[in-house]
Structures are given as C-alpha cells and as structure tokens.
Length: 93
Image 1 (cartoon, rainbow, N blue to C red):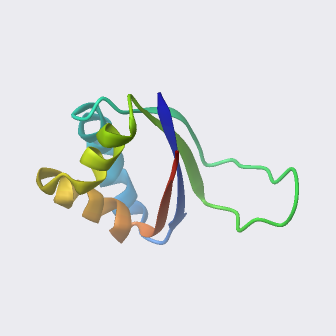
Image 2 (image 1 turned 120 degrees about the vertical axis):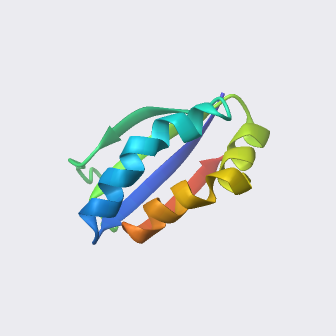
C-alpha cells in the first residue's frame, strides 16, 4: 500500500462539488480510495500552509497512483479538481 497527500485551496466550490461526485470512481479505476478527507485541519507543529481540504489517498502501489494521475481518460476529472482552486498532491514513496 502506498499513500498520497492531497492539499486543496478552494476558490471554486462548484467545481469541487463536481469533482467529489466523480473522484471516488476515478480513484477506484486504479485501485485507489480516499483513506481520510477533511475540511477541518489542525497544525500541530510548525507553521504549515493550511489547506481548505486535505485528503490521504491510498493505492495498491506506486504504479497504480501514477496510472491514476496520468490516465488520459480521467483528464476531465483532474481538471475539475484543478479548477476548484489550488491543488497539490504528494506521493509518499
């Protein structure tokens, strides 16, 4: 199992809502799922740039995660996330 951290700064809630409707199915195509997501985050050390929404995604392996983010058939789904505002995803390898 491998994990990714997604940090979103939301400027377009409508795009985020549309993304949420499609995100689970898009992740599942590559064996991924949302392990945890929240709009309520708490910094417990340092002074990080706090997200509006944070999520931990899980995938069976690195190739599955890279397959998900690079899948051309999911370009419209990833575009919805990116259009919702700032979107950073870090794979924990």
